[in-house]
Image (tube, rainbow, N blue to C red; front, side):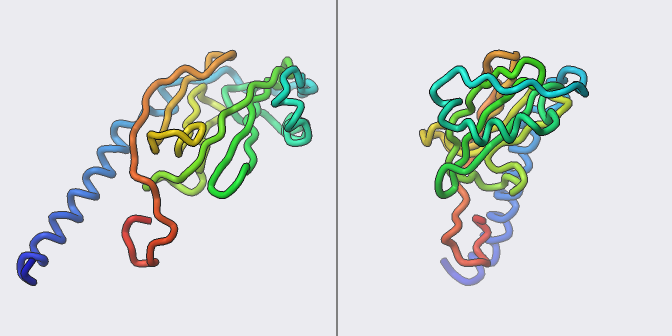
Length: 174
């Protein structure tokens, strides 16, 4: 490509990349569309370690169960690393102590805030977002779920390219 063609191509390419990022944000479900239960202020129940997986991660779960609810009014989401660029966790009911495991989420999608890797959730919403590949299986992206108190129901997946951490610092794919 000639130098003049490159000068014309780069701004157009940059605008397309920016517009695609804006489109992702516009298509994303909003936490406020999935209002959560009223915030629970009582004492936390001891976690019920009823599954093999809950017992395997009992130390992390027991520590989290002493925290204040941070999801859907009376649930505590706790996550922990499980390898390089990988996270897993549990949802703990602060009222009953019931524990539900969250799947492993691996990889980092581009255009996801560092604070939202690999899980995003709010006290006032029953929506939880998993950013990456669930159970290390494609697609890479942001996976939106609605929690009904017993299970996570898929709402939407927005496929996103993977963030490249091995790229030079000036690379716009970070």
